[in-house]
Length: 481
Image 1 (cartoon, rainbow, N blue to C red):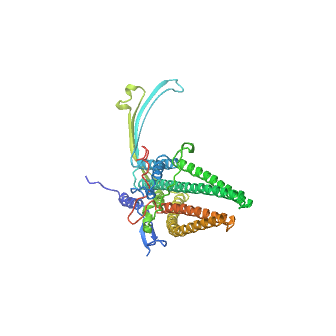
Image 2 (tube, rainbow, N blue to C red):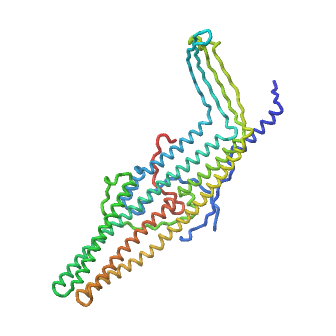
Image 3 (tube, rainbow, N blue to C red):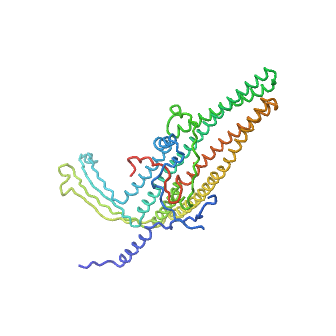
């Protein structure tokens, strides 16, 4: 028998399918970023963002060749509480995706009840028993569920990238703090040697005074210089304790239960090649997070637009109702119902239009934030490339300053012992030599910090074709899938 389709229905079906096809795709094209071909400190092109934030990562801190630092970096990934909190946020995002995916499937419900009631009027008392099973499903005609899932997946990707960026930031902070602590260790050794040298100078001056060669003023000057050096040494001890406590918190331990032995070995300052600017879009987890947020905002525009279309719900229910259990599942007690329901909003005072406009504005905001993040990333790389290159030249110059100051000190000491120069010349030469050595260590610490900052600015890796960055992320909890 031939089925006759009503004319209005035959026109509505293609229209519904056409609208469904239009609503199922996010409305905006992928965002592209214009990047320079190279760094000024090391041809423009359009480079689409690629999701490489989840690529295998390497232990970038190994460039400092310090086993203690390597062990501490591992503890950050395992025990840092800020990282644990961000991991929980990622698990929440994953759970939100599962919640959105649940809308693909029908909801099935079951119920049972038993009542005993007295009827007004005749005073009759009766029982009422019922059992029912129902199901309802809303087909994803307009792609709303699919877009909600896409938005959730993009949000989860942003959360994963934020987790990676949090770990990279914590590991960079640890490396900077550890290298500064080692610099302070070297400064403490220098201060101890300075105190010992000033003690010898005070003894020599005092002996010359007792022999009638020197003056009381020379002795007072030597004692003052010694006391100042001892004060500086004490102050360095405070700085070291504070750095050690900061490292303890980073690795998830109470400061009272953590200590680092002093070391007189200073790591070499590594040379970090920058690669090409386009790789930032692939390596930096914060840029991956910003790009994923753009995708999520784009999907939300489509979700808002589906509110213009009607909702179709398919539902079915069946069960039994009787006065006695024996009759509950008999044929006369059974009931059932099945049928579709179509509902559409005809007037909402401009609510849906405002919701679409709001989602479009939110999308433009995330795009602007993404582009600004890229510009900031380029600036950070340029700044730290300069901070790596220029202080390297300054370090060579400072080494010459230290050498010249030491020669000047030896000459001043020899002239004083020979009685051809006043002790003031010795004090001046000692102060200059000590300041030069401290400046050399301070410059070294700046170079350490610049190296770590450059690695972080590059996303934890560097070099053409290199995708290594942060260490492996902690395993997600059992709730994340």
